[in-house]
Length: 415
Ligand code: NIG
Ligand code: FE
Image (cartoon, rainbow, N blue to C red):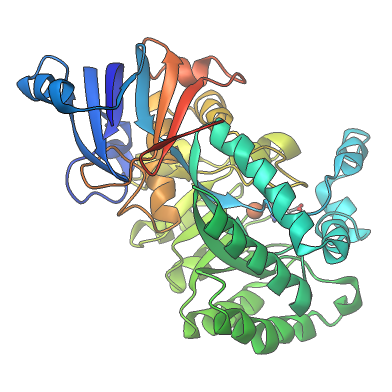
């Protein structure tokens, strides 16, 4: 397929770059008045429409797609979601408007436990159908790869059910899917006061069964005040690592919990949330391969303090930004909105926001070798936007969908 009349092609990366750190985050490879050529699932070439190659391709290529002066950029990679769930939670949303905090709601058995109850009663088919609807919305807004967590099960049976649904999504959707086992997402009521027994259940029963069916790429823990401790987290991560699952954890949403340090110690591919960060956390991330991941939708929805994105970038760290799409703290998987929040609230430039939501999130879900940038040989997961002058318009014109066409695996998808 030859895409022509591209106002500007953004997100070009040459060579083996798997993430952008510090100042590199403001570098975005770009060609104006461009074309892009795909073959099968892959990107094979790109360049200026004034080049001799373009004339050759135009003469020989049967399928030509006119970008109509829109931009072309890599599809978003959403490296942190919880999109397999049974019920929405707008009643808790209204409770929060009336003054309850997220922690108050969790303490009285709402929040994650509310979702777990409904999820236990739902069939695999129901969970699959509703998750696929969410995915269709996400794709329509530009997402081409999604990490999905379990964690609304909290019993062996329900956690396995969720992970099987995620596997089915992977097999039936054009989106690239990675699965993350988050059995340690909440503490079920019957384990309150003896939470160690639940941690034992996760380690001794759930993890071996998840591994036996090869259902998870990653192992996650909600390591935070009021949820799982650093000791719990270490034990669970060690158990997961033994079965080949790489850590990718929730840390420092409610408090400076030590979660970042635990993540780095166990070579987590990412530590996510990071609303509560000190200098020690930033220092600790510096010599690591762990991607700090901010979830702007969650901080927006819960009115949480903002993660110090600029400080992290100034310190030379990479920063990724994902949606956290879930029914309790971020009921949206719109990555264009994540880009807008990145710029408006965290003071990232549009170029930095683009790297934070494409290549750096690709790294955070271990797909940067094949997705997240316009690179020859990578999978053609591409957004063609509506006509616009530059990438600056994308976060600026917030809330509206600016996607004109989505291409996944080299094929136009109907959205
Ligand atoms: O990432 N922080 C933990 N887990 C989710 C919230 C899940 C829920 O409330 O349902 C999050 O924000
Ligand atoms: Fe989350």
